[in-house]
Length: 88
Image (tube, rainbow, N blue to C red; front, top):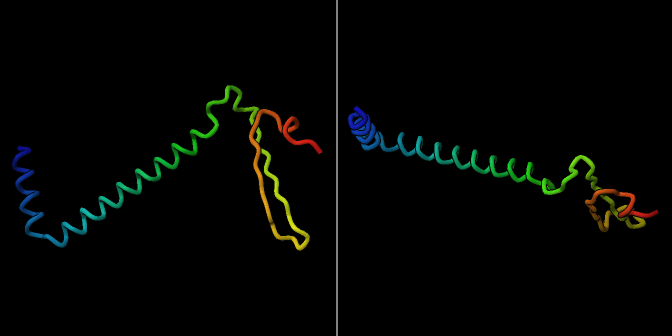
C-alpha cells in the first residue's frame, strides 16, 4: 500500500513540475525557519545556566556619554553581586 502511495506521489511530482517545485521549496524554507528559530530559543535559554545560584545573578549595564550626549562606550558586567563589581 505504501508503494502505491509512493508511485502516485512520484507521478504527480513529474506531472505537475512547477506546482511541485513551489511546494517543495516552501516546505524547505519552512523547515529551515523552524530549525533556526529553535536554535535561537535554545541558545537564549542556555545563557548563564552553569551558575549554581542563577536566581541571584545580576547584570550591570553602563555607558559613557560624551559632553554632547553621544554614547561613546558601553560595558556590561555579569556576576553574583553588583556591589562587589561596581564601586562608586
